[in-house]
Image (cartoon, rainbow, N blue to C red; front, side):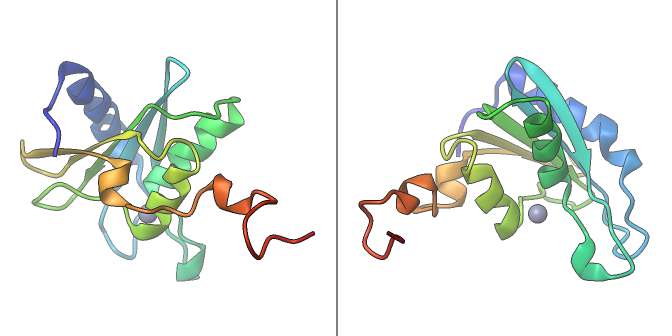
Length: 142
Ligand SMILES: [Zn+2]
């Protein structure tokens, strides 16, 4: 758990701002996310699908936007969901976030003023990251 800063609150405001655009007709659980990378803000929302497996979370939507803009390192992400307590990223999103900075700051909010701030390493210890695919690792392809 980290101390909440003004930049955290500013990023969370971007996540809350975009949340109404979420497409969540099935779960009716809207989520907005805002990534801070390369000095810019990238937003995303959850986009559900009638084929449930095709659904994409807000966090990954925001990451894809940042990557499409050329960013390869993410400083922080804010997540704002419809839950009473702060909405935390799912396991798949934690893994995707780890690709772009295992130490990034994660700011989480819900419907109340309660805000949770953690590092991604706290949310996903021992993440599987690029280094495991180095040629020197046992089991790596020749
Ligand atoms: Zn997710």
